[in-house]
Image (cartoon, rainbow, N blue to C red):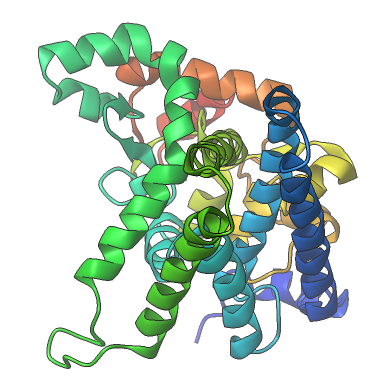
Length: 357
């Protein structure tokens, strides 16, 4: 039997102790962020509205970082035990963020990670009315084509203010439509019961309880809407720089190459990496999704060597450069062709290189 294509890389990671999952560090970061976010939210109750609006982006930044620690739990990369990962993911995603962890697992782990930037398979490259693909542009109506060609790059970031709320709503719709263990077994799954209960508790703690304690409902609802709108924009920025501007793929020959060449490494430094929760190492994360984000910086040189030995492009750029590339990709999406990633086709190999600059 042929050896797994990543067997040698995994041996190197194991020898360096990078396959271990530092549960202590993961929980310490989550608790620390809960304390910081708690202090920030309490501070909003003690200051004027104008002061609160000034403080809000900082609160949103830490709330986004806390939310993204659940991403590790859903990937089973935070703790060694299934219970530890589920507990962390449940505490943060449905309870703190109000987003279904099971919805995220299906959308992100199963669909996006298996087929990043692949047409008809990656849900992250479909966000009506925006297009990320020439194929979708060509199938759009006249009005939507005008929007995609002339407007979408300019309004993308204002639209991103809806992302946090839309993800929550999509998660609720998923829970409503997937309550049972299977189509044949009409019993509520334990994960569904936990997920749904924690989402309901989220709304009680964020909206009902503060109003019951005497806070004006306009203030409570306004704070909730604005905070999670900013979280959605920050979250969009974190995710889009990892993939936008990299090739849109219609077919591919090697999944490992796909994971590397449809992502990019963002050079943002240790402080930036803290807030990215490892997603600045998007290539490493896609190739090794169960690897703790605490270990990604040490794994990066090994992954880069793994790619270069095979002649696969490993793109690493600064955050501003990645943000610019992503914006240009949105502007040109309507005319950017998808490609076939195939090492035997020289023209396509060259096209991958061209799209990266």
